[in-house]
Each structure stands twice: as C-alpha cells, then as structure tokens.
Amino acid sequence: TAELTILAMARCETDGYLWRSTSTDGGLTWSRPERTELWGHPAHLLRLPDGRILCTYGYRKFPMGIRACVSSDHGRTWPAEKRYVLRADGSGSGGDLGYPITARLSDGTLFTIYYFNGSDNITHIAGTRWQLPE
Image 1 (cartoon, helix red, strand yellow):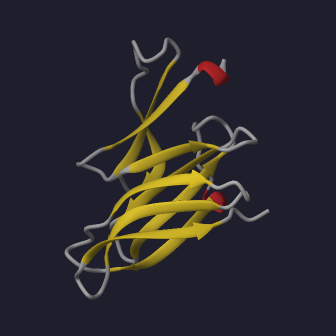
Image 2 (tube, rainbow, N blue to C red):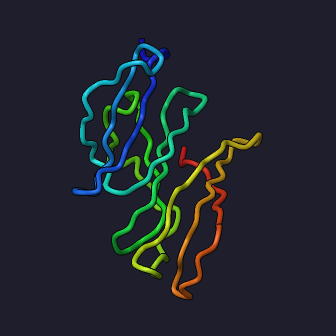
Image 3 (cartoon, helix red, strand yellow):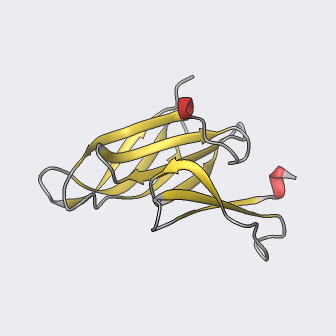
C-alpha cells in the first residue's frame, strides 16, 4: 500500500532531472528509477498531514534559487500548477546552492533551510518560512 511504500528522489548528473524510486519492503529492494518532470537537485521529501508529498529542491538554472512542488499521488507526478518558487535570486559561484530541508512548524507553516549563494558571491545558510496556497 502507499502508506508502507518508501519514496526516494535522486539526482542525475547527466540530465539534471530528479528520478524517483520506491521500495515496498523496508528499503531492501527498490524499483527501477523513473525520471520525474522536476528539474533540479538535490531533493528533500516531506509527507504533509493530508498525505500529499512536498519536494523542495535547488534550482541551478536561471533564475537560480529554491523551489518546491507537491504531489498528490505518492510522488508519481509533480504537476506544474503545484510548483512554487521560494526564492529566485541566486547567482553566485555558478549556482552553488541547494540541499534544502523542510519542516512543518506547529502553526502549519513550513520552514525550508538551505545553503545559498547570491549576487554577493558569499555562501551562507538561509531559510524561508512559507505556506502552501489553499
């Protein structure tokens, strides 16, 4: 069942897309990876209280930044209308940014932390507090 399925997202250095794989036996075996519609990496997955899956990821093409997407079908699809730009002002060091981790706070908002390189070309840790549209 979907509740017992583990979902993993991996990046592919050759095409830049995120690839999904699932396990139904606690991670002992995994499905053949399938390319998703999401370009960017690396990804962090968070199951939301309503069962949807939130994926946050670095986006290293202009406009560079941090993006998010929501899947309502256990990560099989990531619809364009459910994609969000958390920030798009990254430009330093060839797009050296990403590795986001998102947590859901007690008030229902989301907090995504990541490393970032802006126009000042200084690498730093940053965070964005946000919420999904209703």
